[in-house]
Length: 239
Ligand code: 3SL
Image 1 (cartoon, rainbow, N blue to C red):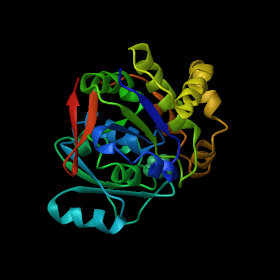
Image 2: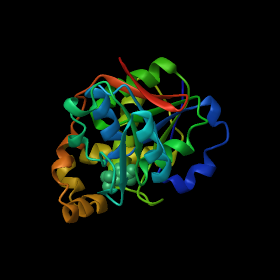
Image 3: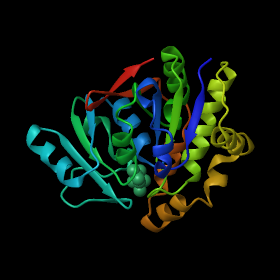
């Protein structure tokens, strides 16, 4: 049976990078990068290029891309979009390509690019992602993007939710981080918004008036689209 491991911070990546070319990696940035990418695919984007750099992302404008950049929760000046999933409307993104850079999510994606498959997941496509992982069948690393190398609750909760699904399908784990993430999720799954009130990024959202994104980011299983890295592009596929 395939095994599950969880990376609670990008700072721990070096402990998991050996053998990554034989593993599936799931990038998790619930607030908000991986949710935003999933919403973009729900609304018809063709592909997304995720870059760690603002400068590189801006160069995609000349290639006809919509360009999107967020730093510290704020849209970078001069870009078409920031990182609010609510801005990625069908009217704007359907049939378009997007180049995106965010504080933590796109950095995590770039770190994991050597993996056998890199998936991008959110609560919105939780079960669809579990189905895709199961179909692939290789060991999985759940990669929480966190906040500037720090642990965060929302990514850990999602890692717990996904690990729960995989364990119920017969997957196994010997990893304390995965067991802790599952415990956090099972204790709080019935009251996620209330539990996350105390989370640092939710507090940050309040200062930036971004609270309305929370509902979009915590919606579970509204989509059957899975998102994976294909060369240097993120592409979507319906399960
Ligand atoms: O860090 C990231 O990649 C972002 O998701 C952070 S924010 O939600 O846009 O503030």
